Image 1 (cartoon, rainbow over the protein chains, first blue to last red):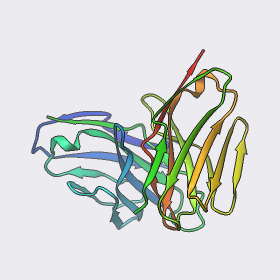
Image 2: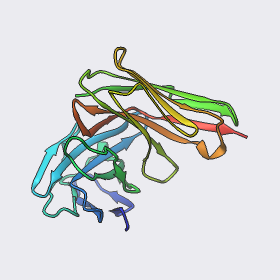
Image 3: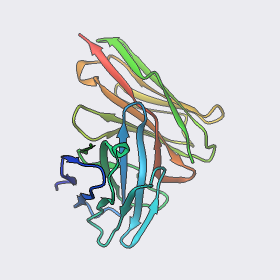
Image 4: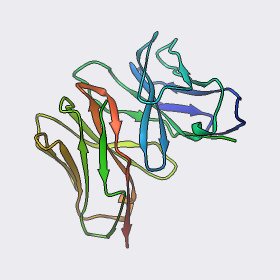
Length: 116
Length: 113
């Protein structure tokens, strides 16, 4: 199993450009999420999904869109990139969104995005 | 939402000594408290977790303690080794939904040989 796969690993954008960060998992996990990691701020939840066709906002959703058309894929879209979106982005999945839950999040290796 | 504070932000210890990282949380309904370790260039990985009905949990050289009354929990690493050098994150669940986590800012641990 590949686990959680993110692409691209690195990307440089100009302000106003759009792009999609891809995330795929092969563990048949129900729950998928996107976090951004910034120095001194830890990991902040952007959007999450508890299953195909269901998405919801996290702590910092502004400027980002998501969709979940299949169980495996959860892309993150930046519609009009801004310098404040320069960050490292992590996709994470978990087996179940129900309670009780093992709780363990499996993270991808991250996508480093720079917006000039 | 949940607010998690983590201290210290950096920690340098001599190999063989112990390391302690402390976190506090704000939502009294939180019931799941994991700890993640992030090595350079990698995604975070779960190392230990604890639920609100347990006060302490141990796994070899690492242990976590939870004080629900005071709303704080701690990670203890004993007999530190060079491979323990990493960034450690504590997290707490959003209310009772333990799949949604709020993370602390992270602690960079350096183990000196």
